[in-house]
Image (cartoon, rainbow, N blue to C red; front, side):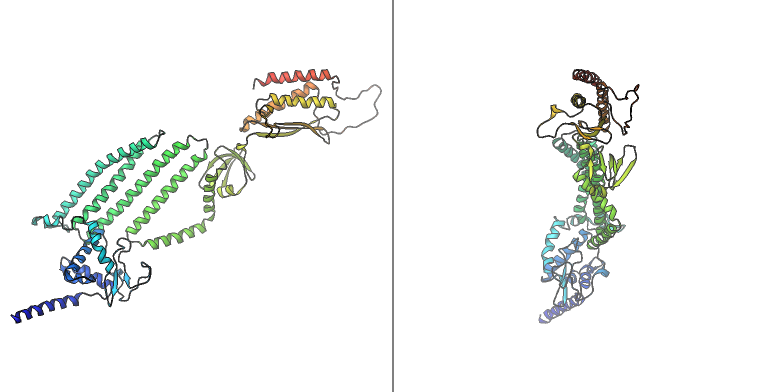
Length: 550
């Protein structure tokens, strides 16, 4: 009996010793290799694989090692042993707050899993061992053997790298996902329409069609999530699982890109309908800039996510994008300045489309505010394209925002005009202004405003007595202002003709001895005040009658 016990002890000791010898834990690469290679069907030695789990007895370590292998398969991670450090004294100074003898094989897909050096050997860390059951339960809520234990023997036959039951499972999953997609897109469309009717009170053309297009990729995303939940139960293996999971993640990102692009279309459609009701056409110019910027941002983020799925290091991508962005920014400083100028124009809104403005020596109507420059059309229809950086830095005179359009000139009359006639002429001009339909007058004057107009004899000129004419036209339109000037100046001219007032022009008078038979060619001014007032009243009545036809 003692010999039998002795032989059993020697046999078990030799097995354990062989296992210990085969469990290479000298480096991160050796530990991961020991864990995974000894769980392959053609090299199945779970006792050796269990040696990579730290601090547990053999039975508990076996359970953890197998579960961790299932987690790797479900996440679609692929182990490239050449990329795993083989240095026994490897130190990670990137993924941990302080440098330590540790290694994370999948820092972005499975950040909870890492190896750590205890003594001379590398094991899955205590923290990882504590997280394995939680990760496993999140993926395999009903256990990894949910389907396998019910599969009859004939369905285990291999067919193109997979067992027959796995092919059947894939077809069933595809059918379920397609059915869910058909049903879900209708439900989502119904919900979106209800939300639209509750939240959006203004009628928007083609919005229902855009919501329908928005619901399609959204339902596909739910289908992909459903596939990602069910596929791990098929136990497809590392290579096929990695390819399928990566394909699903890639498709998920593509559909998310479509979702956000359609969401932007919906947002822009609603925003466009709102800005159409505003008088500011600058908002209309801002729409394509917002749309293109948002869509570009969505595509860039989507491509970034795709590159990460394909194995790119996010830190390297961010660093490369930062350096590339800096290089592009330095090479295109003017473009960046103009872009910032565009943003400042849309924020400050110093003018709107159609406004008549003056920037430096350029004067004209604003036709377009683009991403880089603005287009100004001058009065002679010349097109000026001004960089937005200059527009945002220059003094912009927005004539369209004037409450009134001011007209200031000087009327020069002859030096020999009698003072009484000058007084009546000035009073007559004031009455013409009061009667004019577009001039600001005392009917809309308050003490807090400046005088509505100015008509005064102000100076002795070189060749004339100068009368100031300063009026304000109540219009913002250039053409209407020109017509208003026409009416005003024509009325003043007719008034002068009626009173006998003559306008002066630069001249010199030569005095010489007169011949007895000759008389000087001076104008004959009325001297009787009653005659002057009579002529004034007649001229004002004539202007008042004419003004009604304009």
